[in-house]
Image (tube, rainbow, N blue to C red; front, top):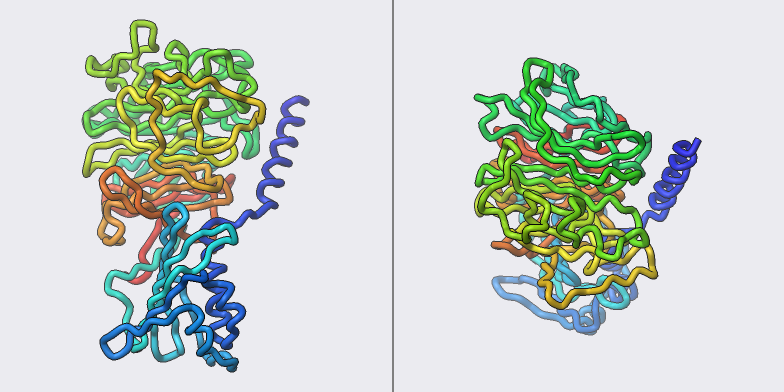
Length: 502
């Protein structure tokens, strides 16, 4: 009965959040640009004026030179008219960095194609146009680098898939959070259950509020020879649960020789924030995330869990593939948990390698906002719960900061809740201009993000597929470089992202 009541409460919370339908920053920018074009099409100076900042300047490219107008000059030229027939506008791209944004829009009259470039800024009154450059001479072809991503469902019927590991271009292992570990074939659509999963696996409650279940599946770097796979999952002992990391040999459709590599004691009653993200670094070491496991800050002990080096929760670890500890791990002192690599983690699920630099990047869930992207550094303290870019669930929580600790700030954080999950550095030919970009999935309201990277900085972010939102659990590339997503739903899907202009 308690589980039923909990399920109903979680479902009610989920539906309430969904019903709010809070617009994203991209949607707000789209609204401003649409307001501008609504006014432009009919000569409505009131609409255009509302979309533009007082300092806005506009430039038209004409006969080899730019003609510039102030906002006042531009509005004085407008005259009411009937909207042109066959007029269509298409938002090609949006990039957002903090309170600045840029957008490219193509305007079609049916036979000619024009391009407008907008710079926007976020003020106390919302997003407004700071300046705009327009092409006056029509052109009939798209930029040769233009891309048009589209989704193609290549496999479905999965029970909230959490992770996917490609063994070949067509065969992959998929861990279902609410189901099984399965092998799938993307061509013939066959599905095979992998037997022998540990008996202490804890089932999740049906619903989106319970984090319990199967998590990551990762292949050994030398998988072809040794057939080792690595799994993370919620393990149960009595009525208590925690995160467990194991290694097993894949023998046909069964797991053999299971070896426990890590158990994130203590076992607790909480069903939240297990972590479970795993990846092999370029150094051949296994890195994995363990969540703090608390839902609210009011349950924090005197020394917060994620700051306590003797507590296994709220940390990131680095171990050898057999579970032993690398000799070059950072030294947190003789009392620290073995394998400890970084502290101050709340709920990190996604972790990946930038193979061009060897750096590891990970996502982290905040509470109310505070969702982050970080670069993993040896010995770093990422601050939770002493520091956060969001708000606490328990409003009265006031953590004590330690002036002797050097807290590491996030590389990126969103102003809205995203619930970021698995992430992937893109390195393929299909979307050549995305090479080196970071693609990040999100659960909250369903989102997919493309981050432009320079060194160890994120310089811009674009949200993709804003007209077809879907809860995304994982972003991954196949051996041939194809880009895939896992959708977090009871009829979970493997979705390929294709360039429809190819």
